[in-house]
Length: 463
Image: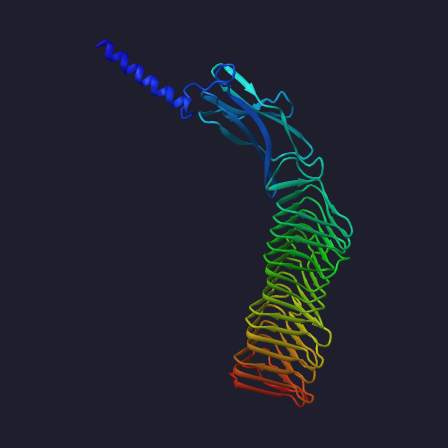
């Protein structure tokens, strides 16, 4: 029996020896001196991950386990004494490991970190590495984000950043220069485009102002949305694929070159600045905060307009594809203001709610209904007025010559209605006309209505 057992043992040993001799099996891995391999630990470079406003560092390390079960972790701090560490993780197979520990990094501060490993009662450490943010205009390490202590692109130069950016300071783009950011961008101070071009393929946010008074053409292109805490003075054109928010400290938004915003434009969130449109501008929806006016000397095309201030139109064209709501007044002076509203128009001014200048082509055309809650409607000589229906809490003053009024539905005027004459002064109401304060027709004026209730006061006709 003993002989058979020894034969079996010898047979197993022989098979193991044969496999080891062929290099197919390593029973006890050893170094050249015959000792077993010991584990190793290496500290690798950190990788930065950046979301707008928040930056964190991801520590990286690599290790070998030898023939032991090991624990790996990182130590980190503001000095090589560290003081903080990550949770130890057990490993049985050689490889790499990472740990996200530092968040909201402070620009200009050096962070020390080191990878550690323990096997049995023995602890070994990797080399000390540093994570430095913002000391050289960027960050050490690599990855999906960068912090900058200000960005300046000199005249004629080009700078491309292929990640998110947090800029602690100003962004300045010189004449003929181009700054391209393939990610989101947040700046804590001002952005100046001095004849150059800024392209952001993400969202752009600045806690200061944006100025492009010396720029030209499409000096600003944003594929996402844009937030400007203070004023935005754009001498150069801009295109924004998302929404635009301008807080407005004093001036609000000034447009001096053809521009477009596909989304909503909100003005005056942080102040009293309105919007001055001195070049053609289009947007999906224009919204102004209280005390923020819309001032037009050039054309505006918008899906909807909700103005909590006044609209001041000087010989410009205003086209609203949807509804127009104005908490203040519409002051359309000059000779040829042209306002078209394809939806309804709601006016709630304290003085003259609508004042429309005349001339050869001055017009107010409302496809839907017009509601004037407090003030008057005042039309100058030669203008055209067209609306689906009209409801006015004040007077309807069309006493100047040559005014043409066409109302497809009903007309209700709480105060007086007056119509001038001249060569073509006329008013046609297809529905019912209510002139609660009476009406006055000048010589040569023409008034036709579908129905005139007896509740109207006695008609007075000027000689």
